[in-house]
Image (cartoon, rainbow, N blue to C red; front, side):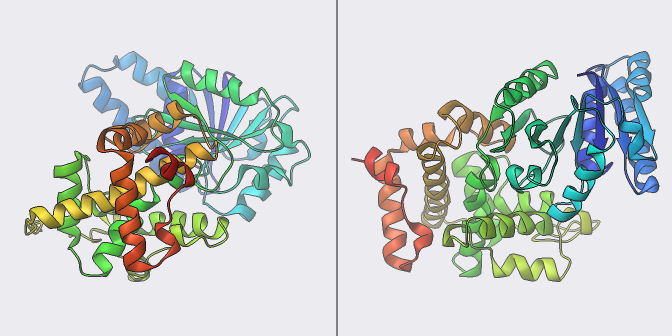
Length: 379
């Protein structure tokens, strides 16, 4: 697979294009918005210049990488591609329309894939004439730096295709994991409480975003707290993924979105990209110092971590991925300091179970129900 088509030249599209080009693939980059593509290619040039300055690559290599990316004005330019990766807006109808157009252009051997973070691979492939060659290849942002790639076969995907894509991703220096086609796949499903429970704690005025972030960083060694991370991802993007996962799980209360996050989205306080989110990113803005409280911090940490470990255990029970893939996905995809199953073992599954039982008794909500496997493991 040497000729790679990328649809969409936004942050993810250009990042994936860079990864493929750095691995000596010829890349065909298409976006309806030519201005966006030009802007992204200019950005890529600056990235490559910085890599040269840091002696990561030679000047000649940087030129070769850049020249391997061909800016396409029409989808027709994808006719000789071996693999096409779509990285456009998270909208099923728009994506499906693009795939149907693509099927008329590429050869029958060409693999068609989506970088979707939460839309069902089976539903995207079901409208295609040849759904067997369709698969999910989900990179994490920023694609050149984040090692994890979730490989997601749908119900109609040809049996061996996931292994083929896994081998390709390994040859690109990535850490691929195979995931079941469930809403959110591995990472976006298991990670929901990191944001959702943090938002709930803030909504109820139990603690401030600064305190919650500080608790997760100091007690859990997380590189970023939930609110810092939402600001980085984009509050609108995070909210959109939460809504998709919630709806696709038939409105399971565990994944219920937050009103606070909805209000932030409505106010267009999206985080770093709008210079204001849960924190202020305008010039000379000072980050407020949290009021430290040891007992409160422990309560916050145990509450969020117990919810995360419960999700990881449930993913194991449902066979969404094997243990190794679950542990790798959370460490390599969202930089968790350790695997959640290992963390549960270290703290003690009984303690996790007790924390969730206590929350259930306080709130009387299905949101805090335990995985049947967690109950079993805590006995």
